[in-house]
Image 1 (spheres, rainbow, N blue to C red):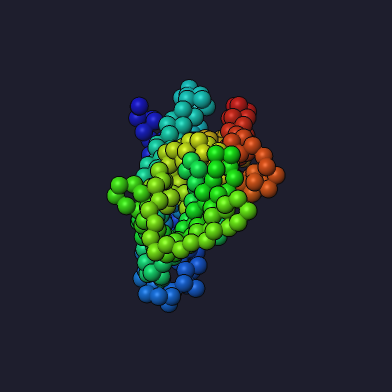
Image 2: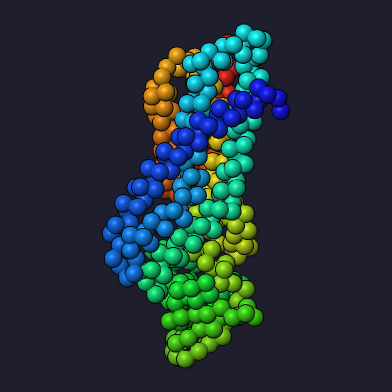
Amino acid sequence: MGILDRYIIRTLLGGVALVMSVVVTLNGLFLFISQQDDIGTGTYSAVNALWYVLLNIPEQAFEMLPIGALIGGLVGLGQLARNSELTVLRASGLSVLRIARSVALGGLVLVAIALLIGEWLAPTLGQMARDYKAIAKFSNVSFAGQGGAWIRDGEIIIKAEQQSGAGEYGGLMVFDLSPDNRVLGIGRATSATAQPDGHWQLRDYAESRFEDERVVARVDAQRDLESGVSAGFLGVAAKDPMSLSIRTLYGLIDYLRGNRQDVRSYVFAFWSRVARTVGILFATLQALPFVFGSLRAAGAGARTTFGLVLGVGYFLLQRMVENGTFAFNLDPALLAWLPTALLAAITIGLLARVR
C-alpha cells in the first residue's frame, strides 16, 4: 500500500467517521426519547435508559454503516475534488480504476469494522441492554416477542413464552408427538430451569394426554424433561433474527432445518446481514463517479444532502424487501441480496461512464 492509497483511505475514513458520529448520535437521541414511556416502570430510570441507549450504539452503528459509508464517501472524496486533488491525480496519469482501487481498500477497511461490530460487539452488548432493561423493569419479562419461541427437538415441541434469567423460563409449553407427528400430549409449566446435566426441571406442570378416545389430565409439582435444547439456544431462538450474528444464524438455520421447521425468517436475516456488509464496499465506491462529475464543485452541504437521499432510498428499499419477502412468500436469499445487487450494478455502471 503506497502513500497515495493511505492518503485516500485516511480522507475517506475521516469523512465516514464524521458522518457516523452525527448519525449515531441522532439515532441514540431518538432511541432515548422512545424510552420515556418506560421510565418509571419498576426501577427503570433515566440513567438506566441512558445505559440502554449506550449499549445499543454498536447495533445502531452496524445498521447505519452503509448509509454512513455513502455520505462519508461523498464528503471525504468531495473534499479532494473541491481542492482539485483528484484532478491533479488524473493529470499525473492515474486512471479512474487506479483511484477506485484505493477507495475500495478504504471500503474493505469499513467492511472489516462492520464484521467486528456485527459479529461480536453488537449481539453481545444488545443482549446486555435487553437484560439490563428487563431486570430494571420487571422480575419476569418476555424476551420472546408476541408469539414466543417455538423449537422442535425430535418428537417434542417446546414453546418458551417468558424468560426471567439466563437459564430460567416461565410459561413453558411442551407438545409430545408420535413418530407420525400426531399430538400425544400437551403440557404447561409455570417455570422451567435448565440443569447442568442438560435436562430441564419443570415446576407446576399440568399435562393433558390423549389416550384412545379419552383425555387424561394430571398435575405434577415437578417434572424432568430430557431435551437437547439448551437454555442458551432457547434464548437465541427467542430473539429477533435480524439482531443475531451471521455465525449464530448459520448454526440456528442448520438446527431448524434438521427438525423440519420454517427457516425463512432466519435465512433472510442471514443473507441480509451478509449482503448489508458487502454493500458497504459498493456504497463507498458509489461516491467516486459523483465527485468526478456533477458534485465535483459542490459544497459539503449539497454532497451531504445528495448522499442522504441515496442512503435513505437504499435503507427504505431494504425495509420494503424485508416486508415483501414474507408477505408474498418470495425467495428470502434472493430478496435479501436485491438492494445490494442494485447498488452494485448502479455503482459499476456509473464508474464505467467516468472519463
